[in-house]
Image (cartoon, rainbow, N blue to C red; front, side, top):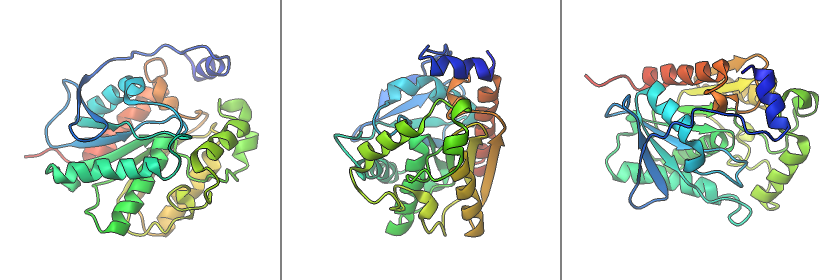
Amino acid sequence: MKAEEVLAALKAGIPVPADRRRPEVEPLPGIPAYRLTTPATRAGRTVLFFHGGGFTSGSTAEYFDICARIADACRAEVISVDYRLAPEHPFPAAVEDCLAAYRHLLREGYAPERVVPVGISAGGTLVLAMLLAVRDEGLPMPAAGVLLSPAVDMLFLGESVIFNRETDWLSPEYLAEMRDDYLAAHDPVDPLASPLYADLEGLPPLLVQAGGGGVLIDGIRAFASTAELQGVPVTFDYVEGMFHCWQMFAGVLPEGAAAIERVGVFVRRQVPDKG
């Protein structure tokens, strides 16, 4: 299936088929999270995964396919967090849950230099918020962070929000409603909500992956440039023409499968095989 066909199906509300491969899943004791593995999983490399859904929806169960693909590409176990959702639990509840999940891993003996948080869409925002909170609390930093189509500016000021409406399935109206539900009148430029406005010094290497056809691309591009200027090692993986979260459709979209493979290369580079 071509990218334009996937986009047309999304806009028409037609479910796009994907492999929906189910990894081995077990609850993680003590927190609302799950450990997911595939035959490619190797000990000693952990992806801490935060799902998307605009901070108002989503769960591990809806992200089995991409979790399995990430586990395969990274040759890692995936710990997927079912953080609290707005509007019942507005900002900063989701940030607190993601940070609590990382603290839990540290208490359980996970080596921070062997952990990489990966998030898609709202999950990418939460990766950045968690990293900022980890830094500010003086906790040991994970090896790196991976942001897939993140929302980095809750003001949504980029011109792409308007000009890319025909090449994405997100709309300005959806973004505004999502922001209202998530922030509940909180300041939209709070750094934990809009990492574009944060002091980013001290963050680990980041992979920032974004599609040129997405409505959020201007903000993502600005974030990548800002992070580099503040001394953060950034790999900006820009894919021409792709829409928001095209990685989710790796089962039918070659560009999605290729994007996840590049995530694997980055994670394995940051966390080499043991021995």
